Image (tube, rainbow, N blue to C red; front, side, top):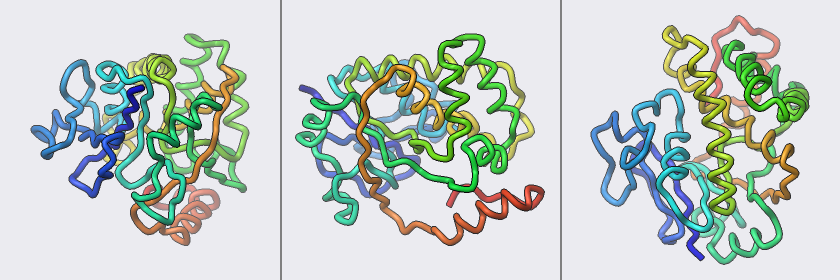
Length: 258
């Protein structure tokens, strides 16, 4: 069985030595190539030039279109699906652990992120422009109406599997990616982001974080949550402070990513 987990990165960074994991350099079309030993995301069928708007999804697109592994996955250079997060790279999921989990479950996902005082919808619109999220609902209602109830339920919940990180059988990964990009490309065609700043221009990456749970729940897939290993220290007090500021002082300057 071929297991290939890609690690999306936009700069050189410490990477796993395990050959199961392969670094993929996102936005290679913009940066003129990729660092040595990194898979560029602009080889083969790709959307590399759209990286400023799609974030790590340019990696997902390339994996969907060009990787034929039996098991596919996506992690990020600062975050990994892990068995023992305190061990850093030594604790990330091994090929054996991945194969074992996928014998019991359809999808491996990170532990949910909880917002407690906010629904997924209110958290998003307090942090980002409202129009793209509302447009995504419209697109789902028109193109994938069977998923609309699942989307609405998720919007009212206070937690979700975030980060665009997942591992699953190759055919399932491809089905998911096809569905995701059908929605996101339709949203892209209907909104104008010309005046968005650099942070907000990453809109399609943000939107997509909600789609994994919608797809899993609608298709009644069995998933397993594993811890997220962070390569860098988490600024939890700053995140909590900014969450409260966005909720209670929505006109204040917004900071959403640390």
